[in-house]
Length: 360
Ligand SMILES: Cc1ncc(COP(=O)(O)O)c(C=O)c1O
Image 1 (cartoon, rainbow, N blue to C red):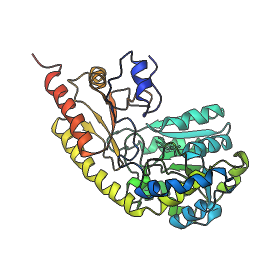
Image 2: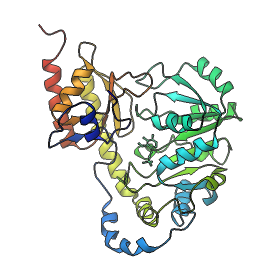
Image 3: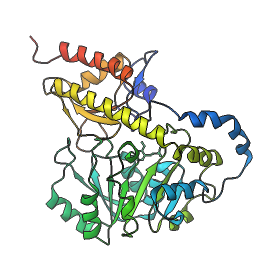
Image 4: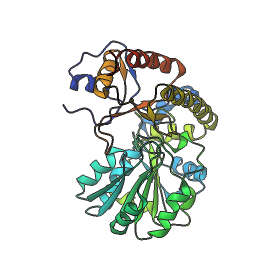
């Protein structure tokens, strides 16, 4: 049975599992902001119709300059892309045939895009999933052979934030290795561990950012790369790779700091409650600081059965069968709203109370 490789694909998941999809589904397999689009986007929407006929600026200005200003870098250090996904694709093309180290478990698109470019992929799997820790001797051995190393921070799927100083020590120690740091979810944190401030000191770091998650813009496709040399990658992109609508929406969203802060505060508080619940039922869960977390039921439960049970009740978790080192035993759950969480929690509670393998 081949399950969808990403979340946010409930109908394909039900189909692959041979299940009828209930009328009402709570999709906790995707991580976009449950608050939806900022109100400012909705207000501006009628006026944006006039932009549809315009060709976009080839460097996605003025979005590029505003993104540069908000990260305190120069515009030439920002390459705007059609979602972070396009950034990952253009990077993989650039690394064609090279030796790449992936810190796993992590976002599956790294492997997919790199395999397309015949890269030799090496991976190191976290020795502790809950706090995303690695065997340091093994990591250093691997880095000596690597041309490029991908680090997802906060990591998808664990949500754990790796400290900036830890990443900086690697960037410094391996100046010939390029470090791609995917910060698609960094705007769900206080940003203190972002490596963007390191860009001015090191040429071997490239940061990937996405507008998708915080601003609920998955359908718009807007992201960017930051780094000293990213402008060089433009040659491999289509001339108008970012639409005029994406540029306009991105401009509005980057000015929505209050919206981001409210979303972050709400999510952080709910994440705390979710962790308390998982603790109370003896689950293992990750030390996440993003808008999702990973958890694993205690050993006396059957993970497959649990996943199916929730699907039948319209609760969709993100399976982990295509993540290195997780083997489908862990589940990723999005932090949405209190109401949604209470519904999911009720179904989980019923399961935990009734389906222990140790029950008489
Ligand atoms: C870690 C990570 N990086 C990048 C992306 C791609 O983001 P975008 O929607 O901007 O293409 C995703 C999407 O799920 C992601 O989880």
